[in-house]
Structures are given as structure tokens and as C-alpha cells.
Length: 275
Image (cartoon, rainbow, N blue to C red):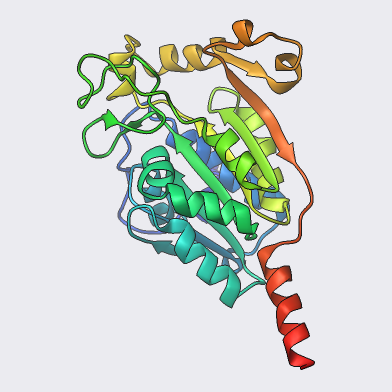
């Protein structure tokens, strides 16, 4: 029987980086497949895509994918991505960030990229801890969860990443877990097609750290937890705050039209050229 190559193989760099750096059972690989499926369906040329990341487990994605890539400093993916989009507006600019990368050291950049409505498709892989550097507490760590830096339980409220970005003015905001792969596929494609700043928060399991502290011993148990603690946005509208306590609302949270930063900037240049 003739061996057939995986249809997504063409998007991987032909290098010696395999197998990947990610732990067995990590949710990042599920997102990578969702991303390349969306890119393949849309039909982007590899030369038309620029993928930018910071530092962290998820920020290793551009190492493996065969696009124009920038692996930048911690928390600064959106800064570099904004520069690329302003300099080469015809390119499709994608950022990959973790929750610590995007919301802690990079939080101000995230808010202002959304406010400016820079045409960037941003994906925040949220595993609720700093997975690469030892499992420390992150801005999205749930209240009460034990980590290496909160051995008695986290006593800070967790950031709701999607709602923060929505309030800042993003054109598109969605959330999905890696358990809900069909939904993740749809949101990923919608974010890539959206004109303006689009962000998808991807809830993914870190089996090495957060899973152990949550008392979940396997990737399957963590994905079951994702399933049981998620509520579709349509159903959430019919639920009370008490019923939604501790649940993750998934689906399209915001989809609106706004002038992009490039459009505003070009309009300013056109006005100034008349003077």
C-alpha cells in the first residue's frame, strides 16, 4: 500500500526540530493543526503569511511552521507584528502568545493593539500557568489553584482575557478549548478572515503543571474538564451569574466592524498630502 503524506505536512519546516519540544499530551499541537487547517482552507500562500511569537511554550510554534516567522522577546509579539503590518499591509500577520506572554509582560501591548484595531490575528494559548519556566502563577491562573509560586493557593482573581480584549475595542473576539476542535477550527478561520484586530483565546491543557495541581492525572481528564466546564455563548445568555460561576463561555464573543489602524493612518496621510 502506497504511503500518503499527511496533507498538513507541507506547512512544516523540513528541519531536525522533530519531535517537538512540547510535553506528551500538551494541547498546543491540537491548536497548531487547527491553525494550519484554517490557513489551508483559506488558501494563503506561505509567502503571504507572517507569524510572530514571543517567549513561552506556545511561542515555539513558528519554529515548526514554514511561513515568514519572527521569534521575538517576551511580551513583545504584538509590537513586532504591528510594525510588520504597517510596513507590509498586504501580508497576513498572525501572532501566537501564551497567557503569561500576552497578558502579563505583554498586557499593555495587547490592550493597545486591540484599541488601535491593528489588522492582526492574535491567538492566546491559555494553559493558566507559566508552563515553560516552571509552572508559576500567571494572570489567568484560577483563584485557589496551587502553583510553584502559590503553594497555598492563588489568592488573585484571574484575568478574563477575552473580555479584557473585547472591552479594549477588538473587532473580533472568540474563545474555544482544544476539546471543542470543530468550534476552534471555525473561530480560527474567522479570526484569520476578519478585517481588524481579531483574537481567539484557546484554552489548552498543561499536563505537566496545572493538570497535576488540579488533580487531573492525564490529558484525557483535562480535556474532559474543559468539556464539563464550558458553556456555549448562546446558552450562557439564558443562564444566571450563579449558574455561570466557574464556567468558561465559548464561541464568538464579539464580532463588529471598525476602521483598522492602517485605514486610519492612510486617511491621515491622504489629508496631509493635500496641505
